[in-house]
Length: 371
Image 1 (cartoon, rainbow, N blue to C red):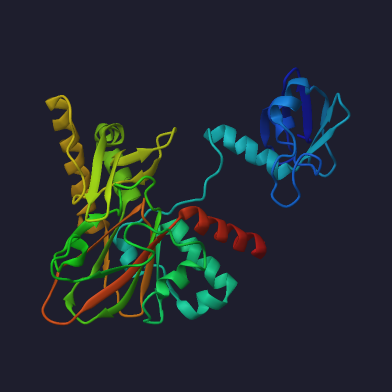
Image 2: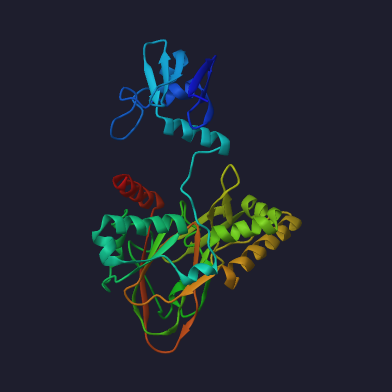
């Protein structure tokens, strides 16, 4: 069928030459007009107040141009032109019930044979290499960088490639090393179960970096789990248990000489359509559920089921961070832990937190430049 558009009251029905069909409300079309009178040429921000323009907006004609764009004429003389790609995006959003999101690739232990690895010299100097590195973090949730200078504080420089350091009570940069009288279990030789960091903080840091400065001890292997994959496995096996973890908030807390932090969040966070968007899982800092005993019992059943999946070797990637290696990961998706270590020697990591929006923004700009 040839491209065509029809105006019927408040609805524009359009069919493009490629078969894409969409029914669009005239208010959304006027509100979304992309022309230079309506949008800032650099930021794309709207230049008019929707509440003042839309009530009087009335479309008088709708048609598809020879170039394939949707054209609308308005009673006040304004004209809007929507590229075919925009119409296709609106049609896809309507069919999914949401705007397109960046695709995620869920993974299991099989990824251990080919984890996302990159080299610092390339990422530091080359735009395409940096784009590929950040794309792996966005898609897989983590990536490993090799060849980082073994200089204290260098993790800040790596963070600067895509965003800003998020300072916490642990400072801009924090050490993870064995120490006597440690107040945080991360600073002991004990193994750490897979977890997300700082669930007791509002908002929780969304990106974490860990840089290995020295490591000549036995053990201390890094353990990673795709928390989204574990949650989806739980949804498949026992959807009611996933719903319980998403419904019941738990208080997470941490304190030391200078900080008193707590937050009430569910172990699994879902969006409006039920997709997993965040995990808060940290055995060391979680509180206990409260309320009706039967409800509490149901929560523990669900929690144990998720932990069993997280601790399953088939969902874990295990590798050793060597001096000069750095890992960056999504702290709301990737659970990280380590095996215990013993014997003499030292193991010192330095880490810092950053934010996902900075990483995704930098990636989007690099992809835009490449396109």
